Image 1 (cartoon, rainbow, N blue to C red):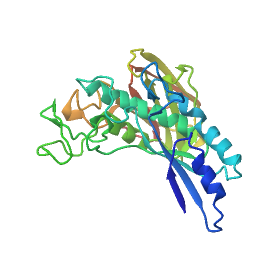
Image 2 (image 1 turned 60 degrees about the horizontal axis):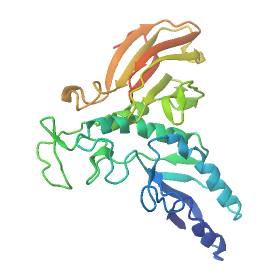
Image 3 (image 1 turned 45 degrees about the vertical axis):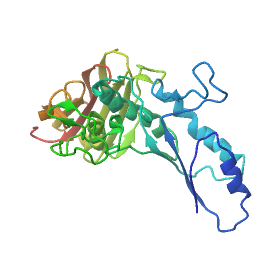
Image 4 (image 1 turned 90 degrees about the vertical axis):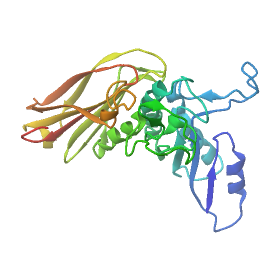
Length: 305
């Protein structure tokens, strides 16, 4: 079995596999990390091999599966090989947008990682992984709060100074994962008219036998553009038509589901629960500040809490 973590611009690895005469060779998957890349050439304008981040435009990864398939096909290899994006994020290594105060970067990551994953989910046989529960040194990657005491930032490294730290408390990014876990099993088509060059309003719509759910978020990176979003859920699934439904709302922004704003409401917060009797088509409007995320869940129910 061959297993590699590679960059798409390293075709020699595929050349070696294609040339291997062993009848027992297997190529089960390919994997790589998605933060950005070193461009071709020297990058002299910003130093040798200046690093290019995806955070400014997550849609830049949209063509990676096509590039991979071209590299596989040209070598006579199976283009259905799974691609595992085993490490993703907005901030590779010790990088940041707000050096002295990491709190805004936590929210940027909460909207930015789903934005990056969105473009991978649009590609066949490609599976992005969330990263990481708690990083040994780079706090902006954390899914759990492990670097704050009494509401103040502290620099925890490894197992040092871990006493009295929060337990089972999500960062905004961790809350974004919890929000996505509330989506339904089957993805359905969703379109946004406010998404350009990787920034703006993203949407994922889902359904199953238990209900329907739509997640929207406004990835702006360091920008500040807000949006009033009208979510037109169209014709509801048959199992929701003609019934009283519970409409629940969940939200993440700079004040809600955010440890840095309120430790008591740090984990994912339900911000609304209403019993509705929708018509054949259903819509709802929400306001999204920069890097805010919102989930709308519809489920059958006579009462709503």
